[in-house]
Length: 93
Image (cartoon, rainbow, N blue to C red; front, side, top):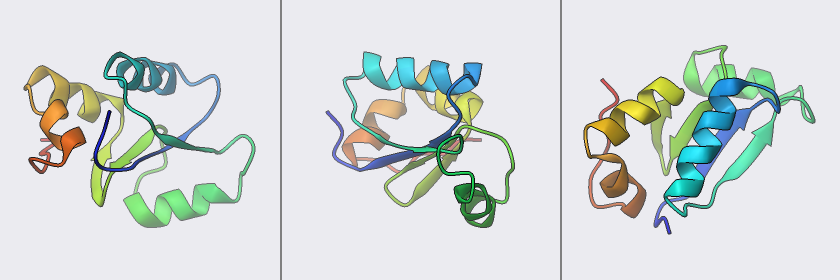
């Protein structure tokens, strides 16, 4: 369970979005998904918030994680659990 809300901008068939979903499921985390398939107007919001055009774009609380590679880097560094629980701020790079 995560202490901070997770928001993920995504597309249904994006393999990196699927990988992010699977990682969150493995952590028993809950997240809110903003589907750019269902709400294409949200793409401009995502770009404005992140400066990036690719999906997924993930936020944990106010922290912009970035994409799946950034999320996975936090996991490999042993920091993702702390970020999810709100005990540490993440550093994607």
